[in-house]
Length: 272
Image 1 (spheres, rainbow, N blue to C red):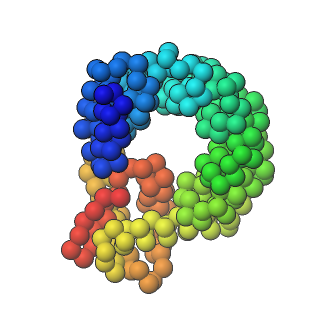
Image 2: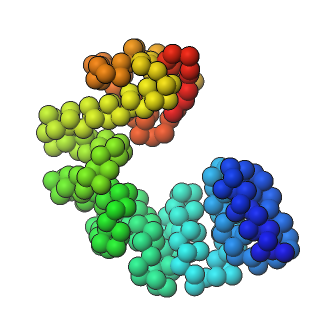
């Protein structure tokens, strides 16, 4: 019965019903409190629903049952990392790597934890190993670049950011980080190229969202909670317009950090 309920939870999750999926995982655990599948899968859904504390509790239970399973220890480490529990996250990523030294997301998690602990030079070998094992995981290149930058080598960090962009030319987070690094290095023309590409991506995404030939962007004022019109009449075939510098900074910050942007045009208004 526990296996059937866990399978039903998986089905509901992929059908876009995460709340119902959690209920199915709960039924699985009521039938068998030691169901590792229900605990591990359920924790992922709870995290997506914003219930990080409960997700962490489920993962801790799963780790007690499967402390040698690198998947469980990696998931636990990431949950602790997101909760700011850096020392325990580090220990659990190390546990995962003792079981499987090629666990890419344990390597990445350990690297990120060490950077957050202000130990970027110690983090670098773990990012190097992850990049060698999974060169197409773009986040690995960005996190490696951030560690190199934190360790004081801006020029080498440029190369790592560029590798992420080569893999995905629309990887906005990498372009934004690279643009800011170019600014710190005094390479202003190269920074402008990165920022212009970001702007182009954002504006074309807005056009796609409202399914129109032009759009306006409304950016969130975090002080008031209100959306203010900041970019007017974005034409699909006219290229990106020039924005005042402050508006551009707010636009790129919000887009890269996942803060909602309201796009309005034609007969539609949508957040993206």
